[in-house]
Length: 291
Image (cartoon, rainbow, N blue to C red):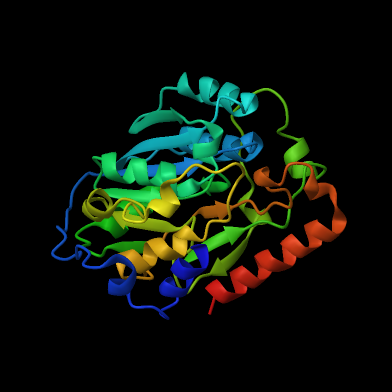
């Protein structure tokens, strides 16, 4: 079933054959003024990375828009639970914390949480991202300027700063390991990467489109719980359903911490062959996104 949807998203199978008649997305309202955005992320065994993301909202809170920060997590990930409890006590202007606990088998299929957030959101825009993304000084205020009067179904930042590949032995992460605290990055350690289309962690969706279509809500396959973390092929299917690869916008001070270990990898990440293979695949995906 997975292969069928991936083929369809690649344009090999017409949408009507897979889904029949589907609702179209048109005449989206172009809102202006003080906008709202819901940032949706997932965290499974990634507390050290999430620490940077949530810290960036505390250190550099937006002034030109309101943020609802939604984090899907599992009670079986105690370090993330502890981190969310810490940040939940931080009072930040224009930021509302929204922690959503899921059974890990629902968490492991990222489309499930994203779909729930999309259907329930009250925001003008929804940013589907990953917990290794950092919104540094001025990032969200620049985003607010870019969103004024926009009616596109999907936007994405044209440039993101990426770090070198990190692992748990790297000084960058060792320095922040331990008890929850507020941490920051040095932007000088990141290299700008230009993207040519939206990717899974850079999908800023019009709120009305999110409420209408959800996140692959029309495809039951992507809404079923699974026993282990899944590759996020549904991101491509989501863009296929929207009918857009995204319109690029300029959002400075946006960074991503690249990492060798995947939370879904359990103990396999220590295998050097698997780590190197993962690294090559990640570089290939980035190369394709830049084309």
